[in-house]
Figure 1: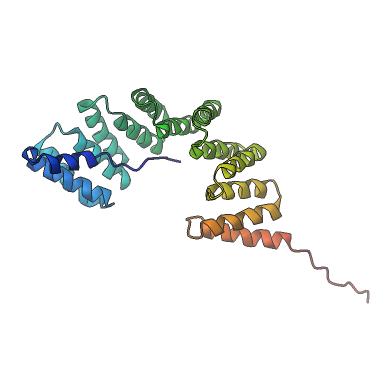
Figure 2: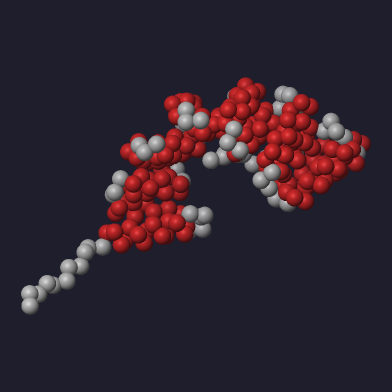
Length: 258
């Protein structure tokens, strides 16, 4: 459930090294190397360079933040949180730090702590809708569905083109068993973007659970056409075969009396 933006905030640091060579130091060189490895998804390789950077400069909040992202991407969430808290103490007004803390706390099933940090992130940066989406997820994890709905609806009202909010609202309806409202939300997404493949899958699941198998089959196939290599392909193909079997007319053998 966790939603994130692509992290590219270190590009400014790289630009600084190029445009102002007099400021180049060993820790900056190491940090640039660590960031490059992380951005190339070489998370484990980047960790050593971040640690070397911190060894040279223990007040480098960017190094702690980058290290936390590498730890998070390899599933070391407790270490990520530890690094983020160190970064927070050094840079208490950076919204991204609180956002990443919120993400990690949601992942380890501590949405109560996630809410605290996400509210701080939103206070520092009200325009980042991903922060608000993550806050909605926190409330879902705490079974506070009304609060989650209100967050998604507020985003939709303020930014009608932000499809992720529709998607989460529709998925929440789906999870609580309100298939009609869920499918309506997914249809709204398709009106705005007919290529939004998750909406086809959502509608298919809604029809499937309502027992409308022929409609479900049609939308499963549309989903596969748009996303033939998704992680759901095997499950969707399996469900399609089950639905085809369910929809086959029963064959009655002739009965004869001896």
